[in-house]
Every structure is written in structure tokens, then in C-alpha cells.
Length: 127
Image 1 (cartoon, rainbow, N blue to C red):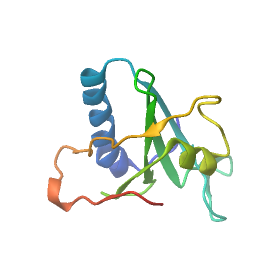
Image 2 (image 1 turned 90 degrees about the vertical axis):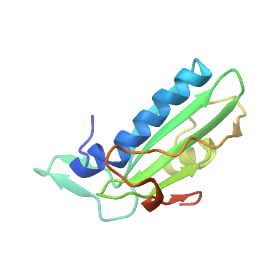
Image 3 (image 1 turned 180 degrees about the vertical axis):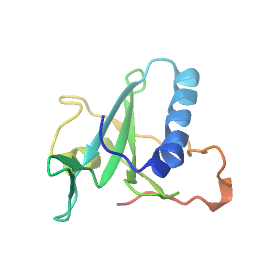
């Protein structure tokens, strides 16, 4: 659990979670890793104790196909989502999520949050 912008949680993040559930129904077993990123020098704190992530990611790995990719969003009220490789998200997090596993990148489904116009979203492939 991390502090998350409420509009982000009810908006684009809800769409990401729905897209991953649908992808799991299509592909079967997937590994999903979700976490925070703290990018830059202006990280906020709540009550002087809890760090507020600047970004949140959801990494999806398909072990049957050796394919992986990650959604990346800023922890703000946004409709923008980026798709990055497993290696890219690992570099940002400073962590090797799939040690010893080479994965090819695949295109994750576009998230479609409830209440958002599908055409107003932007899906970017770079950070």
C-alpha cells in the first residue's frame, strides 16, 4: 500500500487494473508486480514519515511466452500512461525484477478507465 492520488486510483489506475485482469483471462497465468517509484529530488512526505511516490508501475510478465512489459503512470490526476520494458522499469526502480530471465517486450492492452473517453487518452512508449 502506498499513498496514491485518489483521482489517479479511480481513473487511469482502475483502467490499468481492468486491462490486466482481462489480459489474464485471455492468456492464463501471468506474474504481476506493482510498486512505487520515487523520481527526482522533490519527493513529498505525509506527516513527515511516509514518502509519496512520484510514479506507480504495474509490471506484467507472461512466463509461457517469456514476454513482459510495464505500465507507468505519474502519481497525479492524469489520463497519460506509458508502457516501458521490464528492463526500463528495473533501471528506474534499481531492481532486477526477473533475474536470469530474458523477456521480449509485448504491447500491453490500453487501459480504459470507466468514465473516460477512449480517444482522450494518450499512450506513450517512452518515459
